[in-house]
Length: 171
Image 1 (cartoon, helix red, strand yellow):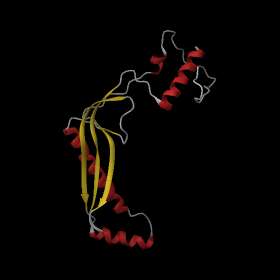
Image 2 (image 1 turned 135 degrees about the vertical axis):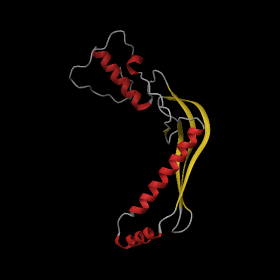
Image 3 (image 1 turned 180 degrees about the vertical axis):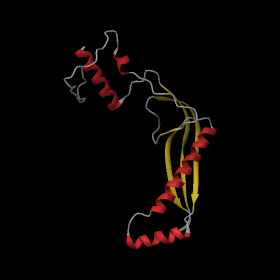
Image 4 (image 1 turned 120 degrees about the horizontal axis):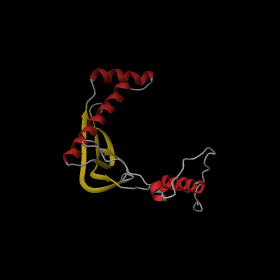
């Protein structure tokens, strides 16, 4: 049965898998996110990870990369201002600086024995006109653990509940 005000989804007419009579709705919906692998850091711009519980806050972590442009490349990219097009070497420099800053952030999180970073952000700042620039990656290092038999909330959970109810009605 759907809750009033929720979207209703029609299931296809093809046969659905049989559901044993002793399976409860939570068992049908529930699942568990995988544990975070050793030496892996999960990152989100949000305040938490869906399906995971934050066990410990370790504090703010960051990584910084300060990069300077090559004078020859700077001259060639200056010519592109007249002809138009993407400034490839600047884009590559930005990507490289961003990746180095993230790698340093991951290293800082591992030193604190965290397996995730929440509230992740980037900050890019020119240091000198036409010269060096800094990229800072920062967030809060945390330790997370998957929630057993997790049932999603919000739209994903509502959709799964509707599917579970429809499967139960057809059984």
